[in-house]
Image (cartoon, rainbow, N blue to C red; front, side, top):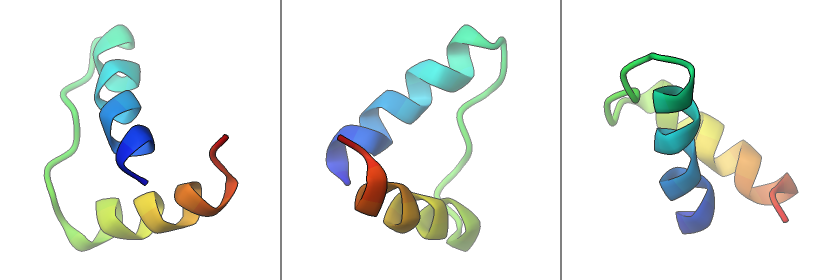
Length: 38
């Protein structure tokens, strides 16, 4: 999960977006992605 969270900030920056703040939606996405990431 930590790897996904670290990479997600770079993903958003490469698209010209601000990385999302720590809210419940972000936590939910992190948990879901952690099950599939790498």
